[in-house]
Image: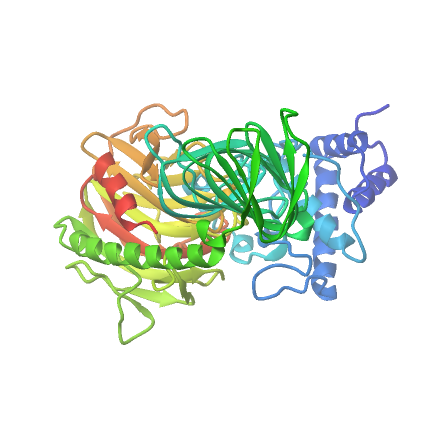
Length: 584
């Protein structure tokens, strides 16, 4: 059998079935081979997809709400322009899994999603700073048709993060109050989704939600093994369990006992001397011996058991006040938030006194004009807010700016030339639905201009352009994944002209380190970087002064509530201190 379509009819049939989501692997390979071999077939394929796009707009299939999702809850993103030039430098794309057939009347949208993946791959269109070396001046490039479609992975273009949440994940760390992890423990981050895992901490309170729906409040000192979505093993400490109907059957096990929930709330404690207590606050719990020394028994609401010697039980009354409940936890979380916010306000004053401070935006200082982002440094380089909406920041009481629409941005003008540079920011990323999420980009990408952004692959990207030389990029290994969406994170980049290095940081820790003369690509060392220039610049977006490339949408999908720039290199210790002193 031929590896490509031999007739136009066969090719059209492949395209139709591709749009309908009905291609098997063999047919997909045949379509891919055909497009690779024939520029005419690629042109026909592109024209067909353009027709689908037009029909999609006319029919208004997608009912996009204000949150930027379609009626199926799918995140939307811009797609490539339809007048992309033909090329024979085709790069094949392998499907991640079976293409599902569409439901109801959305087959056109599915066709668009499929087409975008294959077209982008076949024509190797890299919306990257690598395009910036060849300005696009053709009239066609000045009028870019913008489509909306669900995000799909495509080779060399919109790559999904490789740091994916494991399909074996069983629980979410929902909150932590005054937790001291101790020297022998690995800290868990609030918002982190974890697989089977041993949790050990010296003091404080952890709130953990299992993917079955069960929720537990653990008080330290404690050691607890998260075994599965419906089971945990308690070594020592206190745990209060809330089990909704969907999670009935959740159990807490100890060395010799299994406490099986029959609905809906109970607590278990293992004291330092090894004695165990069960307290049932609502519903009932079945107690099973794991060593066969006792028969099973059911304990009802208001009742409890005390195990004195690992075998004999004594009936007791349940005591709700012995365990932290959700109301107590919420109260303590509020107190901790207020204390950490006040600590940040005090630390902010220290930052303002740093003589190397170029700009410092805390997003918290009140001004008469709501369109002004006040600079707290002595340079008073205020920013101009365009489109962004005020939203809560790291703390409920602290404002941030939300960037959602392609027009959202903060305009800055930072004059002068600089040697060493450090930039730090607190931001919240809400999606990997565009090729780049801009953090800080200069309008020009020419001599000494610096770009800082996050790629759809979860890599943190810095780009630097030198006069008459190819740009250099400094892209980290994958540092962010879907589990990082919606959480506040601290990013920093340090450009050390003296030592000719560039270093990326995430949450106070080094992520990657590069030679400024080489970058992250396999280049021969070039001339040293001498000066960094900014000029007209934007937070959360990009307004290029000319068409360096196709200028895909690069606005940040997320929030920023702090940005600072220093004219010196901050050390590892200083970056870590900035993170620790300003986190919630």
